[in-house]
Image 1 (cartoon, one colour):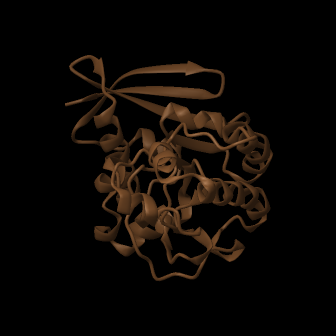
Image 2: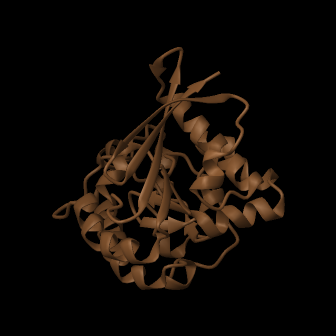
Image 3: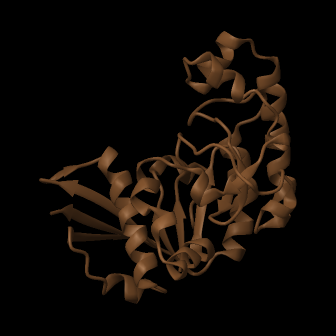
Length: 245
């Protein structure tokens, strides 16, 4: 069972791993797909003025804007699961997990990225800024990655996929042949958005701690603050509706 996860807008700085190259990635053969997007990104932000770049990044702080103008190829890298630090990643709290649970995440989690398309949790990536929905010139990034990632992921991912991504990232890849479980979170009968990120992260943390290997084990899990109230099935996707209790 592989687990799909969305990225986070915010990221941790620094890193001690080697500079960006194909050796940073588990799926080395995808680097030739990723590099053209990275190069378009680098060239584009190089030629935007500060005001344009501020809008594109969604940043107001001028120092932050200038920091992200630097080439990604000269920046230190760190493990992707530690690079992102948004709500879901805070809930995962990777650095405080036992080593076995960290290895579970390293081996089973695939993170979708507006810039890189996909990275595994253990891939080493630089700090970058790419606001969801921002456009690069002369290329539709989501369509480009969907075209190139779909055949690869269909071949290389397991036949059971737990999809914990936000819906936006289905534009990059939507599993066709695998069995898929996705999750919707409700609070007092209403769909939650911000808190959904937290509970996706919390759910992944429990998966890692309990070393869940397949759908059968996942469905048998006991979760203290989530209650399954409905199950919907359509084609290869099973949607679990969970109430936060």
